[in-house]
Length: 442
Image (cartoon, rainbow, N blue to C red):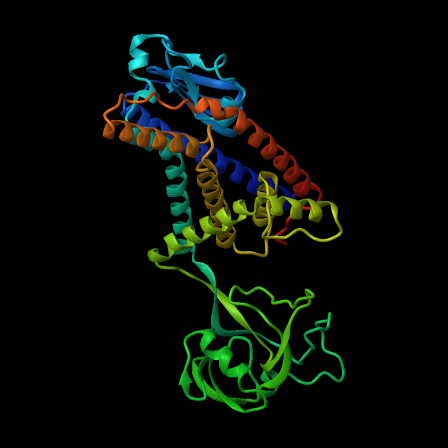
């Protein structure tokens, strides 16, 4: 029963984290919009029927039934559709914009005052700042959450302390892990190395990281080496003769290397049969931005290869194989992972908390990248439209011509509708995949 409650708690934490992230995303739009004098009629979290709302000043604040989105509505977000008309009020929310059409559902600005405070009338830079505010808020949240994890909790780091010692050498191609008669004894076991020993030197050369030790072992097959370990506060020298053993080949990213036929490549290297212990080590503040940047880079790469990723997801979902743990995952899948993390009683509470915080950080990076896709009504689309407007105005000024009319981003919405339909299909596929073949951390 306790595990079930913890599982539910993990899902709730992710949903609350997502809701807060969406809410602050819209705050990122709201604050500069009000600062620049744009009339903001609504600030809403979610979509669908309104659960509750209140009014403060000229803005209505509220929460809707489905908390998987949010928006603010700004007077004159789109310019007049025809000569003599007024600007059209619309929202920053993708769902709300898509259910509108070009002219009917977008409410026209009612008063002269509202027209003067219309979004489309702002200078280009202010329009960019307003639309960039939401994604930047998510980026800042991601930096905050990653900073808490990296600098506060730390990350699992391989140490020079021995975590395990094998009694024998099992062939790398074998499916078993237990020793059988005829298996040669592992060199580390024969030499007397024990779990908990910290290696401080190899052949008299001090070592500070596993990367200082592994190359020496691999290059010293059938050649005795002296390993200095710290045990119970005292140092002692042990002589180990690495065996020539066949091992799988891994690249710099830790991924297994395969040949042209897809079979794992192997090589013969020195091997002594030990596993390294890990411990959480707090990282410097300077490690936060590179970690966030790396996550953003991997997500952008995934989006750039989205068609192939979708095909792979469909094959993995309905085929006999397992899903790629590094592949696409939906909100339901993230929730399941959060539930599994919180229900892992064998894992320290601090580690579980760090994993959940990092998940919320990852969701904020996803919101940051997704909203910058240059397609209206996403924030990136409005930013691109504003920048194009700026370039057109500059060229008109240089040529001594009248300032051109603002670009009507609403005319691109039919194209966005097609893309949104495709994204809706992907959402359904992810939902099915997360239910019938979920990615698990267990």
